[in-house]
Length: 330
Image (cartoon, rainbow, N blue to C red):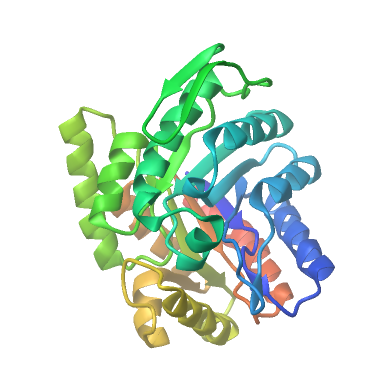
């Protein structure tokens, strides 16, 4: 099993940008030095003024030079807002930069302000995701490539460089609904389970996903999973350090219209269903439960929520690497 860390991915809007960028790099270095296998970056547009996020492909390119050898992933990149030629060339370049270690997490997106500002009808997001992925695979794999879709067309074109990974990076599809995981089974290499999803919803979506793979005759290679995580030597301290910032982040999700479930709930409800939190032994046991139930090959964690003390997030990464990962890899 492999482990990763989110770089942020969302920082307070009033944090100095150079401070936020430095913290993102500190997070990547802490992950590298603590035995983690990869780092991931999320994406949204237009999150100001209350929040800020870095452009994911640019940030990952910087991290590739800072921490060579780590897997680099997007979780997730909103492909429907882009033309596939643009993203095929950008991700091919990034795959070369990082030595063939890129994982491309993609999703349909959900924020109305993003679609309105890009001039993309939200009703077309699923179609643009599906066709966009089909076009990416053609561009990554073929020279003199031709694609004749309903939304995207090109004839006899070639990109250079091609990705180091033959056929392109693995594509993980983020999905919060039954319809989404059915789509993930059809067009992706894996369904990427979100940290926002409760265990109850995960079980329902897992059953739907496995069923669709069986129907399509496609292999099941596990469910890569994002979880919220905070670890400290004392369980009560672990909860207190992250509780307030975590609640504010989930209140933002509720305002943004995040699909899937209700997120304006009490911390105790969210804690039971979504968070790996406690002392090292408790966190190790909780991760074991996930791996046994959902066959998780790669689990990565958010350890920072806007308003939290950055050093507490870095301490959690170091402690997880020192005390938890060795238990899980025995």
